Amino acid sequence: MAFLFMEIINSSIAVLTRFALGWYFLHAGILKLLDPTWTSRGFLEHAAMFPDFYLWFTQPSILPVIDVLNAWGITAVGVGLLLGIGTRIAVCVGILLMALYYFPHDPGYTYIVDEHVFIALLLVYVLRDRHEGKWSGQCLLSSVGIHPGTRLWSWLQ
Image (tube, rainbow, N blue to C red; front, side):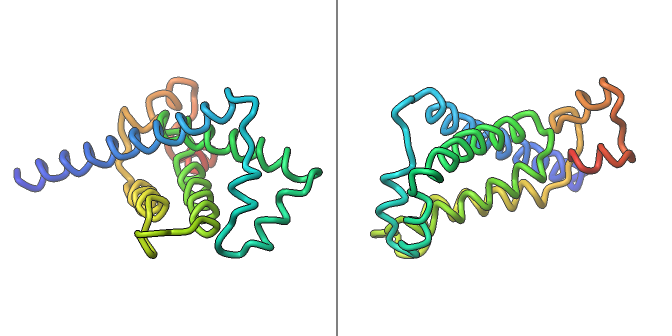
């Protein structure tokens, strides 16, 4: 009985974590998409670590592509996490984005660990969690004819 109770608690925490991260990414992406003046130029030009690598992305022919990929990528990660569809892909892209955001900035008073590290660790927790249920996108996929055991199902989950 206690094991079942703890399983329900763990599952609930995992789902709430996934929802919170989904909202975090979706909100950040929507803000970037809705602001026509937003660009990653300033962030990239002031990179504290690997400045030459990040400065390369500010070239006039590359920066617009980076801005679009960044804004839509963050938005897609948020949608994937909120809906629970393509969760593994969304988490992996989210971890990659957090790593790319971590290195250029000056950590300041936090020294090594900052919010990007915490978010990446929470994404790893979501990736590790394999609770399938009505809040994981399983019902939606099943309703359109994509069922567990199919190749498409395993790719989306």
